[in-house]
Amino acid sequence: MRPRTLLAALLCCGALVGVVAAGVTADGGALTQAWSSDTVRDNEVNHHAVGVGPRGDVVVAPVAAVPNAEAIGPHSCSLVRLRPGDGATRWRWSVPAEDCFTHALTQPAVADVDGDGGMEVAVGTTQNALVVLDAASGTEQWRVPLSTYGYGQPAVGNVMGDAGPELVASDIEGTLVVARSNGTVAWRERTDMTVWAAPRLVDVEGDGATEIVLGGDEGVVAFEPNGTRRWRSGVRATTLAVDTEGRILAGNTARLVGLDGATGERLWAKNLEGASRVHDAGDADGDGDSEVYVGVSGNTILAVDTESGATEWRTSLGGGERRTTFAPRVADVDGDGTDDVVAITNGGTVVVLDGTTGEERAAYERNVPIWTFATPADLDGDGESEILVRYGDGRVVALDWTTAGGGALVVRPPATGAR
Image (cartoon, rainbow, N blue to C red; front, side, top):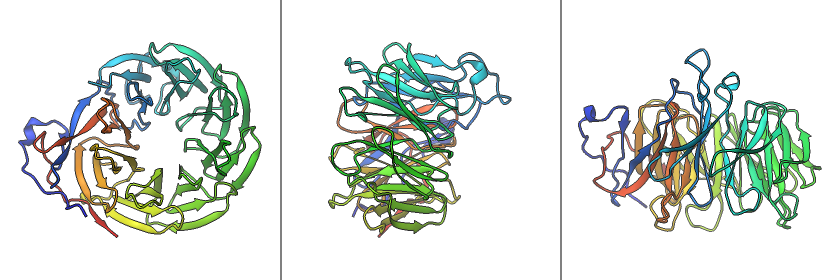
């Protein structure tokens, strides 16, 4: 068991404007700010996460403004490619001012969509379209109409079983679209529900076929590769996670539910004291079993066994005020070969937790709200995942695990993990 975070001396708070950085742990680690992007807006409600390519060299942030609260110009709502080394802007692609508001751009997907070896960026927009851009230049390649604007990140994968990948996107009204790599639509289906969660691609039976799972306010639906509905469950899902066995984990208001991916049968249900948000399932404790990591309103993080629904550990992030807690992410932050759990609260706090015990290893705070989950990615190829945090003011902050002694130190009640 790792020891709890040790409290360290405060640097002069006057030297830091809106930033308080890492708590140092007994194993010598800390979270420090590597860079902060120059993408600030006159609001604090940006809430769509950063997209990163599979090699960590393409970082793209959706940045939005708020009409009637700030001046709206031609680049107020933009998709911005950031340089991974320092966060500098490489290019921006913008929606027109008349389409600019807080949901203007989803979290982008970055992948080689057309199989030419280069990266593309796919994003849902308030132009009621799924738009694909060339990642190198930011120029638009093609677009597919949606019924309305998207909310969750598009998915990329070989759904149809042919030579190339497909793009899968949903809009806020629950219309699901599967597009080929040239922009033609393979199929489109309505689910007639409000959908906030990103579509998930999963082989629910282990037979090599890729199914699509979509969660919304009136249920969870699974589709076959050809668009045929496989099953529909009445379990509500504002967020979704999938484990390696094809189980579906549905998070919603005050409940977490495990579903059999092949049949939609409910495996277990867990009542919680607040909204539950999920994104990643994994094996951060190395016990050979899959866990889903849950953010529960009120500064609480859970590790839950995906087969049984049993709680393996529960952590309170502390800090006094009860905060909205977003879906934790799983990544090897310190490069030791084992995964850590990265947790975020609405108060601007980012915490790295031990995957086995749930105890705090390091923390970073910036006095700006956060409204979404983090994006872990190895930006410099050193084997450690940096943490990209989308703050409400439009900035993206990159956090890096460093040895003790770098940056200012926060004194606050540490998170505590309990079995």
